[in-house]
Length: 341
Image 1 (spheres, rainbow, N blue to C red):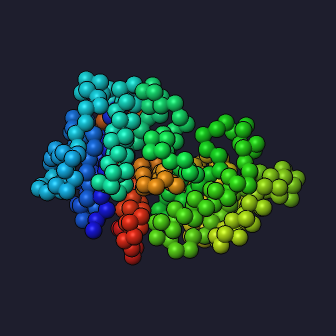
Image 2: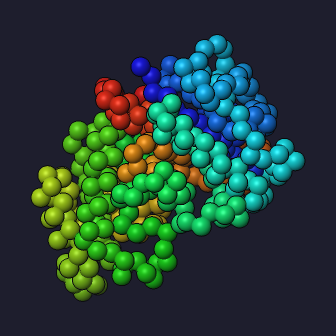
Image 3: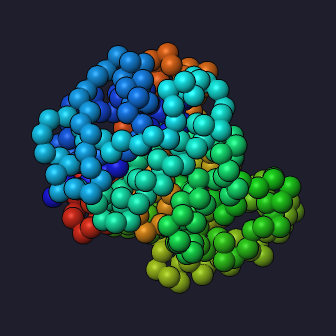
């Protein structure tokens, strides 16, 4: 039984439509999973023209999921969230944000109803979504709110087999130190552990990045490591999690790069993002982790600087699809022996 993945095109003015077209052109895609598209037909067709890669799109009814994959081409649940003359390439707009949010809603509804197992979305533009009424921190908070999930969740970034979680996220750097506590660190460690287990890693190895230079240098450069990080790591170890640290943040990612660690827990947003994107910007994946349904997207943004030019790199989107394949497979108890090529 193949995982069923709902795919939406993301911000119409960015590279999402182009990347979706390139993804659908991948020869082994349908061997991995059953794909259903959700979004505006004219945006998907725009992406095909941008990519120079066409495939048949077949309108299907949301009310007949058992028949979605009958016939040739990719099934499309058509929406009408944005008019063709409202799509202005490389421009922030309320219309683009509205299309992103409404198509996301539709894909989430399908997954909550059990018609699909996971959601892959093309890059969103936060400025457009805020113009469209998004009043939460980011799309991950929006997803949790929309589906009514109140448990712990956070954004995870993945590069090949290495992931990062973070204790604080989209807050000012001046507020980071005061926002770190033991519970937050333990939650981030557990999220990294549980996500890797769900992706097929039976014994994840996790390292925790220090907050201060040289891990505080025994308290000379700050005492957060002594007072907060070490006790939190010890609490996580008592949960039978293989976690260690705190490691200086300027070296801990070398352990991840070299395969010594499977995950790095960071204290703030850029502490992990800079390292991961430097190691492989074109392969990074963002996972909305901790939610009851698997949701992922390429870690890069809408790339307005190259939108519409047909030159967007598919790598991160393909990796996001592969991650969802694994997460959806394990989510439903179907063992995967190894990650897809």
